[in-house]
Length: 360
Image (cartoon, rainbow, N blue to C red; front, top):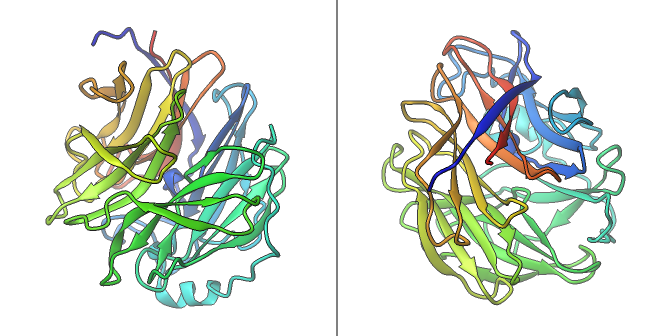
């Protein structure tokens, strides 16, 4: 495949005394040239381990907004009830997590899934046994949020929700979720559906009910023929044996078939993908690489996921492995806007950036 690619990079949030990261845990939405992104802001600690963050201080969920297609951004704390550490509890000390886990849920959601200004976003308390999850809704492009609304446990030991919804009608939507394996460890992916605006959910199917390592953090796109493609972040028996797999459902998420491994390597600890469809039907998966050369990459398919290009560099990184967790949206002009966290110095700050890509 031959592409004529142009990338421009735009700073979203960068402070020398902050650790910013993990936009994949939340969500990113686009309305014409207006884009909203959620991510985490904490504090750095060079001795923090794999992620150089201070585990003894709470993390805060931040919200960034662009009104010019991703070229400039304004950032505030996300206006969420229970917004501290949302989706990143595994990155704080246990005593902080315990002080935050008394989640009070609102009454049942009554979401209209085809509202043109809708955003729906998920949160979680952790990754393993005991984790619970919920979702928030906004009908005014993320200016205000309702929730949290409880996501049921589906008889599982833990649910670790990532924002991954397929909207089907005003009342119905399919939600892809990560749950624990029978031993309480992370994880495997399943699909569920609501048909009453989010009041109740019913289990639909496992994507793979017995992965050898783990499969987590789904990202899905619905094609014009109604089929669903879902990427999952995978890890084998070793921490450095990580990749992204692709599954397909042709019957409304009732059953799944394994399609391909569009990203064979994502480096130490792995990274999730974000799959979107360009306006001409081509599919793009963006992801961060935690192996040398570090960076933000994309693969592209011109045949609806049957085959994929070699990795395409969106943004080279010159720091270390602590990068990635992309979220991508497509503008009305078909340019791709990809947000991620990155560093250009192993001892420097982790910051949030967006790359705007024209695939020609």
